[in-house]
Image (tube, rainbow, N blue to C red; front, side):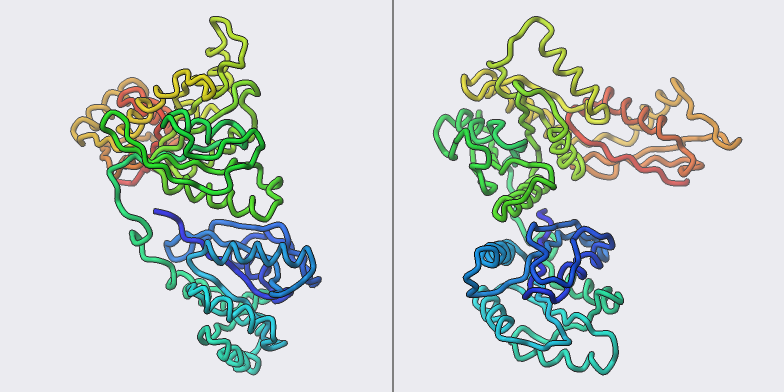
Length: 436
């Protein structure tokens, strides 16, 4: 399911960035009394009361402004409103509503977006009653908060979570495998889709950043249904400066969360770099199945060991992610492009794989016999029982006597043995331990 998006908006200098930092409980946004400090967008994943949502900080809105920077900030905020599942309008309780807020409120009412108001800078009971002056904006009664003192933050988060879409209501089930095509800008994501489906369905350009949004392309091959999702190229967060690019980056991250398999495209002519690893980690963090397609293989001077060298480079730089299968393709010539699909099918099957409990416990007996867990602080570790508790990703619960003392290298040993035994290539595995 897509993680909901909550946009924090308002006129300049009402405390949006301060509230953003309070909600996330870490300092991500620059805070300053000077209006207009927030220009480059900030976003973060917020977790409250068991619900996750993306929180987006926006610059101060000044509807009707003629200034170039103000117009750019306004455009950013309007994109945030359009994309959001909930809009949080922050107002300054000390100054009261002004004409700018009336224009913003009118815009929100026209959009029909789900909106709540937070009256910020309320530090005492007397000023708290003044918040009701914002009720005339037509967006309901505001909640009282103080970003500086931390007052009302929990209540505000409760209200935000209460307005989020219900779990399961944001998408419809489909029997198609949903594949997000991800990677750095200009590695050939759109070209891959065009070559695979045999027609020009998405825009292809040598200029990095041509794809601005996640585009769904339904596709069928040998009786199997797929949805190919072309996404904007992911860059380092520090390099995401452009207003439009900022939000398309966020849309790409949401597309990864909403996919079954992430197909990671890498440029063979440039080799694997730090940003490729960041893209892989984005998919691994949400535990999606993964396949790596090394594109532009036709541009690489090859000998009998070239593919082995590239594979060893992956293992060297990302040992914890070396379980991802890779295939060498050329979107220009079509070399092995169609062979990506059987690999995706295989990973998808493993991502959904269920193993009987009796078989798992035979497996546990075998691996413990091969290698016993080391004693810790004079305590002998015993693994009693294992069962699978979920799929997408495969999740396993082990019962033992001292789960908190089990060493990381033995946990890696268990994971590696599971991969070898049950062919979990390309699939993140979740392993949990519980005291019997």
